Image (cartoon, rainbow, N blue to C red; front, side, top):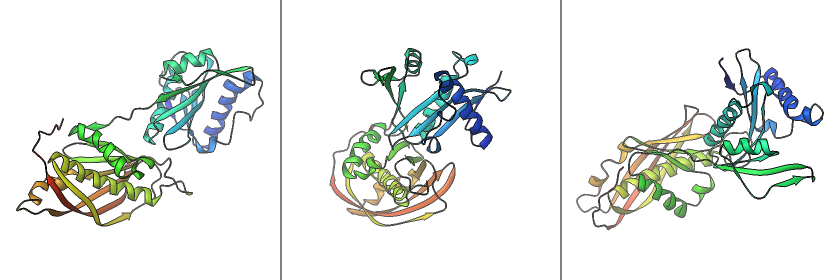
Length: 312
């Protein structure tokens, strides 16, 4: 039998979703219909697993509380389908959604030994001591740290060094959740989640995406200088950005490494200064959402003794 996991969106799907939540989680506790909903549902991501007949097998909810943390709640599996991996299927889908938004850790609560065992199987660890809600219901907060896969096939050690460098020089980069996710012989890519950068219209602040583009260009220049074993001051001279559409999800900024391959030649003939134009394209949901171009002045500070650069 085939199963599919979907995001309930239509009124009919959402009505079935909440009815299932009440029947599995709330009805056994003698809670009234309607108690299964709360104010966070409208701002959360929902998943449900359907069988071939379109019947609901399992559901779950993800609420992103800030730029780094999310909460998973209301994991429910039909009694006929338990211990078959459908709960874990929902968990993995919600975790992937959280990861795509830049979330670094997920928090949830186990309310009995069975759920404690289930969440432990899913990779969650107890966070603090268990307690009893209103002296009756067992509760154990649990947490899981998400490790976003990064693809550094060139200068991996320098990519990790860049994090420390950029966070120290530009503290705003850490506050907005700026992340380097790819660096190879073709391009450098960074990502910025919507969580923590959203305006009142549920799209990304223009200032946040501008900062991402600028930091992406700066990172490319910094890595190129480090690979050449050069110390240089990087100064933005001029920049412009053209927005094509609102950014309503995670934003990927990409810049081509071909723009800096001739950097060593730019410092020839004893010149201590050179200028570079760096173009950056911003994407969201595979759509080009903005184009950035920055003009940078590089002023060489000193010469280092040549070293072998690890580009693995």
